[in-house]
Image (cartoon, rainbow, N blue to C red):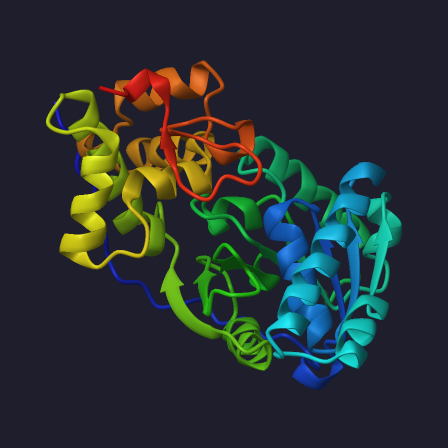
Length: 320
């Protein structure tokens, strides 16, 4: 039996946040030094925020700093920034492996850890304990309930979603998600800060998948079903969407870029949240995740990824 839930509009609970001033939000801590975390750290540092990039792994932090410098050098070659701006951006970033130390002076924390609800709840419990009481706690989650994350803290009014798009330095959108208890002051502050970062924020409410992934993931899932059912091959599916729908990247290549494990996780969250079969992950996607064929991050998904290759090559698993 299909389960349906009624979605109703609600009036946001307005809780006062004392002495909130955008000009005073200078110190930003980013939790997680992966692809999203280092990109988020870069965009804040480029706008002269003091950034602490925190990860449990020194190796991950070293890799993140190298990635940021490489990104900046690429921008320099395109004459988008100067040598001085590179030096300034890098000087605005420090690193830490201890969360308690990383957040002790934070005005804003942006969590960008793995898309795992248990991990995020654990992190937010610690952030709530260690960050200053007026610090805003944001999460870069692409699908997990902001309200659920906020509920494990003593400051649900100061918890909000900041869903950056990948690659963060390039993509303009920030999906700003307000939880059930997020205050108007916190929401407006994050909207203003996002503009200061040179982004275009869009405010949405807290339902599974929000807006971006509620629309994107079913499309990707349907593309995988189209392959699974033998309607067309990998390249054919992506070509139809690129040339017929003017998408810059086909849905299967995009799934590889995002990470098939991430796609699978988001679809499951929407499936569980709405109880609707249309969000159930395709069995082929489930099998690929189980086999650790996750796309670019593992070197193979729907396509094979080799260093220096200019053209996408379909995985032997799907070659006709």
